Length: 385
Image (tube, rainbow, N blue to C red; front, side, top):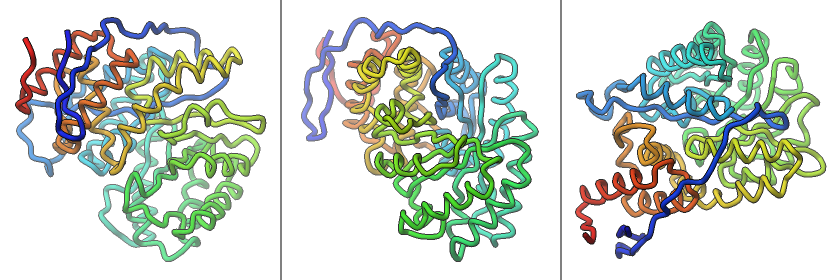
């Protein structure tokens, strides 16, 4: 059966969906790379809320999706950008998410790391920002999860220069109970983070970032870099102190960065591994055998989908991620906290469906096609009978 999909030009085209999903298998834990998937939250579709209300979360469906990721051997990066931190999920909701997910991880033996930020503040002094970070770090550490120190909008606005970043991060790293992951999120993901690390010049910002790491390398497990610039990540990776990992957050160039070169490689902490979870896990297990070509053969074809989901404005990639989770049967609806299901156009979603279906990402292609048809019908797109 074919389906009529709208293109970017508004014209309808006929697409023939595949009838069988990609065959994927589970297996042993990864040995060559540490891999986290940043995970989305599932909204409660029956909650009577508005886009600016506190998030109404379907906790059962949200935790079930994390069990899906853990079942394939992936770690979960919790309460991160993919979970709509600052775009529908406030700190109170994030704290509840951290506690619930960390408890679930302990129950099933899953690996988890959780975002620590300052989103309980709209703005503040450097001292207030440091205290906000401390509050969130306490919640994460008490949950038993590893901490990911996220970039702070408030710090980006309040800092007068690199010295403020050195002071705040130095203080946090000294008091962290266990090594953390430092997160550098570029302004393409969040425009409020322009000039992070004290300078709009990325070379100068990198020097400050590395100065923080060098001064506290015993407290830095790794860095998560989301700048969508493969060469910059490679250059930064090569300058890290021994023992500090680079986790790629580059949703445009991840296969080559994870595969690595003669001088090293990146581990992974990626939003695109939310929809790609089983396929990504299978690819990493191939890489564990030393077969880089086989790894690239599996993962390279996914890049078109990822670049489509993360196209400008990149911060709205979450809409595509949740859309694909609905089509794949991981949730019963296409509703998002903050009403963000409206953030991408119908042609964008149609192309996401086509690309994901072509990769065999839907466990039940017939269900995905039915749900896609239902969405098209809401928009007035009639299908051939």
